[in-house]
Amino acid sequence: MLAGAHEFWIDSDNWQVPPGAPLIASLRNGEEFKGVELAYIPRRTTRFEVVQSGTATPLSPRMGDRPAVNTPAAPGLAVIVHETAPSTLTYKDWDKWLRFTAHKDFPNPAAAHDARGLPRTGFTERYTRHAKALMAVGDGAGADAATGMETEFIALTNPYTGADRIEVQLLYQGTPRPDAQVEVFARAPDGTVTVTTDTRTDAAGRAVIAVTPGFDYLLDAVVFRPGAEGAAWRTLWAALSFHVPAR
Image 1 (tube, rainbow, N blue to C red):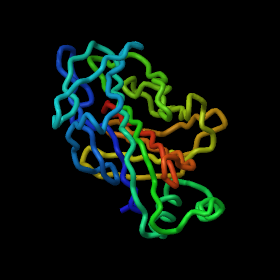
Image 2 (cartoon, one colour):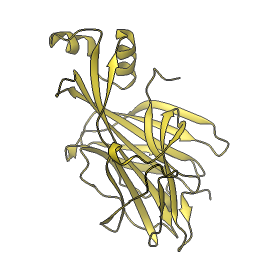
Image 3 (cartoon, rainbow, N blue to C red):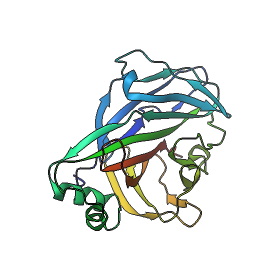
Image 4 (spheres, helix red, strand yellow):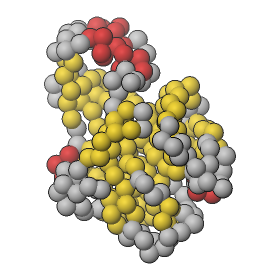
């Protein structure tokens, strides 16, 4: 297990569907690209939609629906967007915070924490999730774009076009986020998952990820900043999931 960090992402058993078939996808939480399927809970969601050709259509599943996404879509690239309401976690174990911040690439966490006069136990982290998934209807033609989430990945390469490398851009508050760690989860057809943390964005917030046909991918990046509303820290998690078709 990876330092207790739990990712949140949009997943599917069928990333590519023929025209006329519904898009079906799940909300998941877990580690190493494996986790539990979450039921749709409206109060935990602030935004849920599918974007195609620049047009966003709200998704309105029923309370408790699993999978959370079951919707018709036009031919082309479909971008599922999901943002969560804030949640709060209380840290009773200082070492757990240090492991988490080290894994998610927050520099000098102890110095930053102590400089603000914060206690080392009993402090809180308030977090939100900002997830996107790329799915294909028919040939999946089209392009991803910024959706206005506070942090997000943009796929500058459409993974359904047969590319060997996928270029992405990471945004925070609408501007490129430079020198940020991009954690890459690659899931093989047999379910084996490889996790790497050596990818970083450049000065323009861009990164290139080598991909393997037939694999699923999850990209993750976390923003740390001082908290508000009684929380010591605020974290914002960007996630992008997609499939690379076999050839």
